[in-house]
Length: 459
Image (cartoon, rainbow, N blue to C red; front, side, top):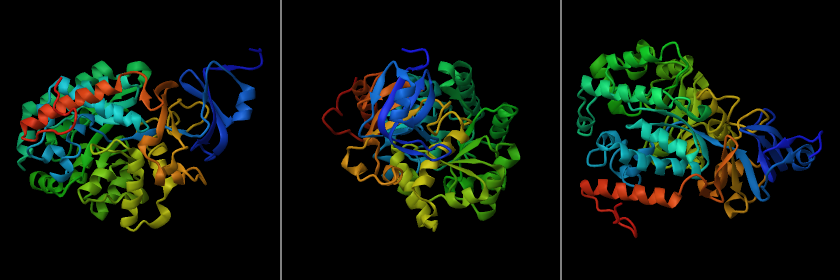
């Protein structure tokens, strides 16, 4: 190594680099140089090849190199209801006769969260928001997978067993227990691995949290930059319950208790009146749009109107799928069905799934683009796959034709956590088998015998 040629830890060369940086560069035969956890340069392969002496080279020929996706709304243990809940109800917490979160043990939640984390990683999400019961199980799963995550508990004082019957019964002990679970998570996990795992507060929804509990969460979060996550206006039943209980709609309630603001990441935001859209926009709320699950339930959020009003639109996959490529396409389709036309396009959706998600989580300048100084969270797609050809502008084919299965390699903080489609930090086959065993046992309790070659095995 010569004195005037600096070293870098990893030089990724030869791919089509879709940087999503300020110049919106798409670089044919591009390269990304990485030192420790940061990107130090993005340019043509010939240019960086002359600038750096890498400790390792990664040949990206025939690949698309892009920023990792930022997935802002997930409940990883709820992957257990996939393929079933879509035909039984709009959301698992409100659906009877399916595995419910309040009945999961911590170990069951962990084994299911591992499956959810694996899917998110395998399909190119490098930063995720995840909140559910037993949140330490979720944090542990993401830490082991190598993902960047914001994790929180599921805080509520409505009795979940009653909710599944269509009844709202509030219990102080339930609220105290779920809030304590969230606070314990923060104490033990916030800042893990140099900040790769961060923790927030997550009141489940305005209908499942009494006004007093929402006020307590707002008090605990006041004066900090801690992320807040909730569901907002996700169903007509939610809106009707809050109106019965409090004499106001959910948006007004959150504003009154002090939760409506730029630190709030609000999932769904479907059943909003025009004046509420304007209020959410003025407050600078971050909307976690989950178009896959919403469409499956026959609902479309007014995201274009929310964005025009000032809200920041981000994308999440929720519980029905971990594939944010599918989510981007569904977001475009949903917006166009509401009349947005071609003003919502591939670049719009890709921005929602990267830079906007990063900004919503306080990570602007760290993730969501490929540029010098940013964290080395990136994804390599196998562009030799027929669905990613022909490539013209490099963005349209990713969003309109890409699928999670195209993801070949994933880096988080400069560490290779998926290579050749296989995780590097855990045994993917074991994760899948263990989760199937849990799901088989849980569904059997509800009268649904699982089918399939390995579905009958319990471990």
